[in-house]
Image (cartoon, rainbow, N blue to C red):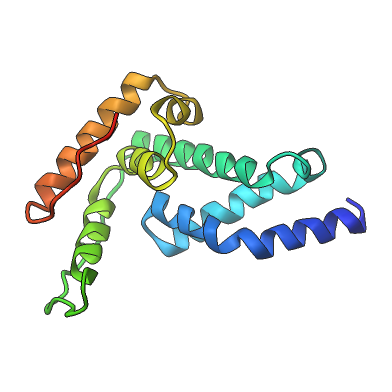
Length: 169
């Protein structure tokens, strides 16, 4: 990699890290796991930088993060995940507008299985279509639909007082 490529890579990483870290956090639900996911995806992207720098490097890096996350939860699914602690609910709700709903939603999202959380992030945070999500995750559109349905149903169970918008098709 020559100096020009290094400079472009450094500029890209500096400008897009906050947005990419938000996506990684939404996918994992944990700050340190999000950092690991982002670093892992970046490590896989850097050797290919020369080929992707003119195309869509952010899209490439996001795709690597999604696929890396899928491989993580598939590996964990085979081993079984053991939760060591439970998230403590805040004793007093935050008086600011909407903060209590955001905290409750974050806690509920963390309780979803990784596959369902990933589908929700891709569908509603990244605003991808069902077919785009299916392609990224390497599954069928029907699988995306069923995971989305199950995830939204579970969120409604966990947050009965929160009014959800209708799920779009």
